[in-house]
Every structure is written in C-alpha cells, then in structure tokens.
Image 1: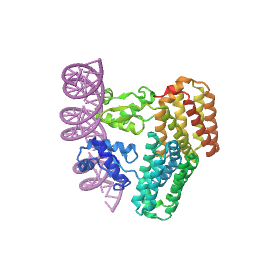
Image 2 (image 1 turned 120 degrees about the vertical axis):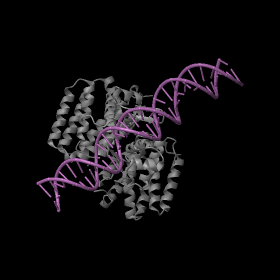
Image 3 (image 1 turned 45 degrees about the vertical axis):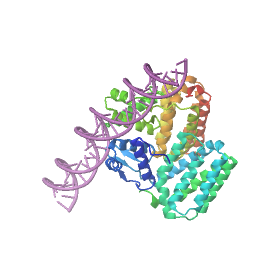
Image 4 (image 1 turned 90 degrees about the vertical axis):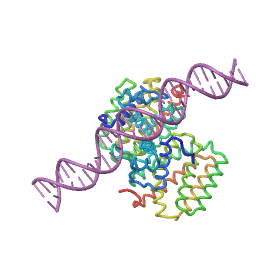
Length: 217
Length: 217
DNA sequence: TTAGGATAAGTTGGATCCAATCCAGGATCA
DNA sequence: TGATCCTGGATTGGATCCAACTTATCCTAA
C-alpha cells in the first residue's frame, strides 16, 4: 500500500499490523517487546511506541507491567461492534456520496467482479474490505474513516474464522447486496444506499451470531 | 475520579488529559516533551508514552520529528463528530437500558436538578457530561463507551467555547430534553429514549453550526 | 497431599545519553 | 533585490543500562 516508513516505530507498527490482520498473530496471543525488537533489528523502544499506536487502532491491548496482547473478543463484543458499524458506516456513505464519480463506480464494479470470480477465502476477505473502504473513500473525514477502519481491524479475525468455517455457501447474497449498493450509489440515492449497506452489515451480524464457536469464552 | 496511578506514563497522561479537557491547553497548541517532563518531574520517555495514549483518545495528534499538538478541528469535523454521536450514543442507551435500575434514575434526576440549579458555565459542562455518560453506564461495553468518551473529549473545547459565547440563554430546552430522556428511561422505552437523545444531540449540532467563529479556519 | 509463602527468572517501565530531523535565520550569488 | 543554499539551534527518535513489577516454581509446614 505505502512505502515502508523511514521512522522505525512506524515501520514496526506496519509490520505488526500486517501480522495481526493476516492472522499470523491471533486473538489472545501475547506480544513480547524483546521478541519483536530482535526479529526486526531494533531496540525495544520503538517497539513500545509501535504497540501504543496499534492499541490506538484497537489491534492490541496493554496492561501495566503485563505486556501487550491481541484482544480476544467475546461474541457480545463483536455483536456490538457490528451494531456500531450498522449505524456509522451508512453515515460515511452518505457523507461521501456527493463526491462519488464515474471512475470510482467503475473501480467498485471491477472489484465486485473480482470478488465474484474468486474462490479463495483470504482473497475474498481482502477484496471485500477493499470494496467497502472504497465506498467510503470520498467521505474524506479522517475521524470517521479511521473509526471505521478500527472496527474492521478489530473484527477481521472473526470474519476470517467465520468464512473459513462456512466456506463459500450463499455467497450470491453478498453479491446481490454489493450490486444493489453500487446501483444506489450510481443513482446518488443516500437513503437506498444506507439501507442496503445497513442490511448487509446486519445480516452478517446475525449470521455470525449463529457461530459462537468462533469467539472467545 | 480515580487515585493517581503509580505508573508514571499513566499519571502524566492523566495530568495532560485534565489540562486539555479543562482548556488550559487549547486547540492547535503545541506540547513539548521536555516541558512536560520537567514540569512533572520525569524523563521524556514516559511523556512520549503518555502522548501516544492521548493520541489514541483523540486528544493529541503527532507528526514524525514535529511533535505533538492538540488538534484544532474545523466546523465540518465537529459537525461530523456530532453526526456520529447522533447515531452511536442512542445505541449505547438502548444497550444499557435493560440494566437501568431505580437507583440510577435517582442519580440522574439529582444530577439534572443540580444542572438546573447551576449558573456557572464550567459547572454546567462538567455536570452535563456526567449526566450523559451516566445514562450509558449500564451499557458495559468498553469498546462502545470508550468510543463515546473519545468523541466527547474531542469536542469538549468547542462545547465550552459555544457555551461561553451564548451564555445561559434557552437553557430550558436542554432541561426539557434531559427530563424527557429520564422519563423515557424510567419507562424502559428504547425507541423514545433514542429519539429524545438523538434530537438533543442534533439540536446541539445545528446550534453549533450557527457559530463558525468557534472553530479553526 | 495441599496450601501458603519466599525466591528467582523473565518481562516491562524509566532514565540518561547520543543520533537524526526540522526549522529559522543569515550569507552568498545570480 | 530576490531566491537559494547553508548552518546552527531546538526538538524529537532511538539505543543502552538499570529498576520495578509480575509470575511461576519450589520448598516448607500443617
């Protein structure tokens, strides 16, 4: 996405972020400062700063003298995160809708085509994330979009776990929702766009709630 | 509120947080690590960590090699924050409503009485904040409530500036909204409670939008 | 055998020192 | 005269060393 930053703390943060989002570091797993420092060839200090940054993004949690770990969310916590998304993401959509142009709609359609053509779970997750974040890209309100990214990051692992378990069944529902969303955006209709998006998130939430085995005790 | 933490970084963070929320450090103002370290009798290191924590709370912003400062928000940014609050805070209310008991309602009524009796702007701001956060206290979803606190913190300065300019006029509207909110909570009615709360936040937003002199260029 | 406590290892928090970066002011040259 | 480049001060980023805390283990005693 971006070039590796020259500042060590940012570089380390980017590395750890990728490891957490990809699932190489899972929920509940501990992150020792010295391990990371040795692995990335730096002292513990920039690692500490990086962990603070990730904490701000909801990717790690800290306790004094007890170190950092990736939060293990309960089903209730993920459920609430999805309820927040149901209310916040439609706002980002509406805020950005006036600035959506044809080029963006084309990119969305192209992404959706790749989503429908794909068969790999990891690929689907990445493309789906890219698709939705792209629908918010014209919003241009850092406070709002960063909040949304945080929520996507926090729930990334559970989305992957769910997808891995359930596989590709009923994927046509996602495709239909995505295409209706694109079409509403093409019409510039914020009411319809919000409705399809909220429904999309809500349906995902209710499906997740049928798989408690994905979550922490 | 809580006892001063034994960990230096937390203590420094608490100190800076209070200074920012009280307005002693205003938007756009720079925070130099060495100044804070000298003033609070610590090295720069815990100050750096404290600034990272505050960044996570939206109270400061950082740039590499350029230090930390309190963000100066534009009117548009505050407007969007209020639109987010309009959607998210009603959710916290509904989530916590089943666990609201008589004792909590009594405390809310008592707080509202003190709000209506007060004449000082600073006191009003503190009590109003306490009132609303108390209505979310039974929600018990850390991810949701911390998000709400962040938004209150980020907009604190502009609320104070607005109140200082407009004074105490039309305060009866706030009282009426608060009392209707308490009453809806007493009935355990999430629909009405959400409606009154969303209206309360929305009205504040539209009033703020009539005072562009409060915001950054 | 188990509960309790002391101890030691491992990990994080903090202080000091050094390096890298940014910014402003002034000198130089076209 | 004006723009550009350089240099010095100020400030942040990073490394190393030391202190404090947490936790697990082992030993002792009931």
